Image (cartoon, rainbow, N blue to C red; front, side, top):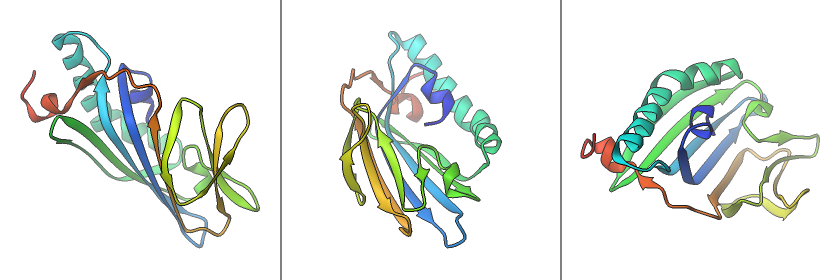
Length: 168
């Protein structure tokens, strides 16, 4: 998850990860942030969170990803009803640069913390270390999919109305 979201007062209910691995070891990662919300109280604080999200998405995101050897090829924010969704696709020269993905000689895997539940995946689910859940794919897999959701959801305020311009 991009740093400007993780450090702010924003919450993400569900994240969908689609990773393509190319024969040369490069790849791309399409990330959908479904149901972005503010945990602030009051319209002015919620509006500030929304404006910070927009500024980060439009300005800081490319810089943050370039520093980590990732090139953003597509990004967009949109509202579906009152739900705000962010989509981001980036490429990497080496799949080990994909956030959270671990690469060994035998497998590809991600560890999911106990605060998140796996909604679906095309990988194999097993117990990981320190109460984590591990999703594993064969090392030669070319398409990886996993969707995770927060287990404990405080709710927050829907940001779709701010994105549509219904709120200021």
